[in-house]
Amino acid sequence: MTDRRPRQIVFCNRADAQVSREERDPEPLVLDYLTDTRVRVRLPDFVRSMGTIPRRVLDLIEIAAYVFCADRLTSRGPPNSLVYDSWSRQFHFVIRVRDESFWCRKTTIESLSNLLLFITGDREYQFQFLPGQDTGPAHLFDSEEFQIAPHKPHHVMLFSGGLDSLAGTIEHLKVSKDVVCLISHRSGQPSTATTQDRLVAALTREFPGRVKHYRFRSNLIGTRASSETQRCRTFLYGTIAFALAQSLKQDDITLYENGVTSLNFPRRQDLLNSRASRTTHPKTLYLLSQLLAEVAEQPISVHNPYRWKTKAEVLGVLSQYQADYLIPSAVSCSRTSMARDDRTHCGRCLQCVDRRFAASAAGLSAVDHAGLYALDFLSQGIADGEAKTVITDYARLGLELGAETLDGFYQHWITEISEAIVPGDNDEEMVHQMYDLLHRFGQQTIDALRAFHCLDDVTKEPVQNSLLHIIQKRDYLKSESQRFVHKLADKLCRAVPTMFARHPPHNENDFNDKVEAIIQGDSDEYRREFPTTIFGMAKVIPDHEISDYNLLIESKYLRKSTTPSKVTDQVAADLVKYPKEAFLVFAIYDPNRAIVNDLAFARDIERYRPCKVVIIR
Image (tube, rainbow, N blue to C red; front, side):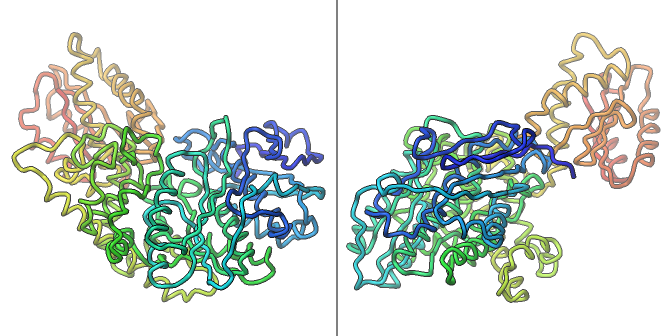
């Protein structure tokens, strides 16, 4: 496969190197947090002097911060770039470091590159390390006291301010006597900082003297990120936790994320590769542990105690420890900029959808109430096609997983299962545990749908395109191709009569031109709602083709002289002419109502093979 995107060169810490002219296109990124006003790298509340952290670990912090910033400054292309090459990127970092001999080791570079390739889905990460980096303590750290009570055990945890990290923190505080050291990354969004601080304040009141909060700031200043995927965040996040763990002489770092989100089985084709987040995937944690162990020259464990819990079960932990009152204060949304007024969640991203379904399954919808969400998709119409797709895909995946047998699960998801099994795992045991986890998730999705359905007011029609409307129509039981065909059929039935209200088509080619214009005119909307669609239109036999669905469209125009039997003969010929695996759509324009019984006409055709008859008037 040929490369479609040029390599991005990134010079860091005043580094430079001989790079060919071809490699310097596009223009290299030059990043230096000491002088670059775009890049912030700080560790508030962390250490007082540089001597607390080894020079090699300081290098690691800087590397992670620069990778994070370069990731956000380098575009992946438009969201509808479905081809893998369009989204995957190539990076070449040139960085000045303190411990050059260590970072130039082949094994070190391989460990670093392997981690980043997996979590980002990018094509290549090259690193060239140069000597000469040096900083005074005030440049990287603030002057606040770094205090450790040596007589108390400490435990280092990542804390995002979401429900999973909140539940994990409370559970650990309840079952142990540890001082919990919470590591938070501040990426520049004020709402995230506010959420984290409020939750930590509540935890401090509940567990006095046992909660320490360390906030690390690494973000872009005065410039908007080209890529908001933030796939590298776990690398940066884990590196900061590792630095603190090293100071505390700890070899264990904990993060809490429900196992369904960690595995993140793709709901559709366009979520493969870099589009499917792997921030807490078992392989990510394994590769991160390997890299950190190499830096520390001793075993380091980065583990997820909630690997085998669903989101609903995580909410159950909060309920179990009488902490469900904190649920409204935790923020799970990935698009908080779309929240409105006092609503803390957008209500349309995957994280919001997952949270609302989980709260319903856990019986906590009264706590995780609709007032937290800018879009209450349960009762409000979902105008955004992408949001509707997220909700429908989520429900469909849950139903599929809830119905699958162990053997069916293994055959269907063998690639994802294999990827999630890391060295040291028992293969057979892992398969059973993954199946149990995702089967429970499926059953909880069904429970949530049933609970949502019970909220339906039978005296009123559901709002068009609300979740209650989707449940009523059972859209989540239809395949993506079927849903696309229904949307297309509805569009044709509304648009074609309007186009020909004054003048009928001159001939069938004129009708075909209008059908193509309708399809192409809404292509951007279709890509948002059905993002795997690639529109390869062809004015040949068939009349129109949408290749990624293997969908063929035949247009028929019944003029006054055309009898239904003639159209039936044409359709019959088409039924046997095209491959059986293709789905056929027959768009039949019948303005003079030559077809007397639409249902019988369509039924007689549709019984022969997978197809859809759309009669337009």
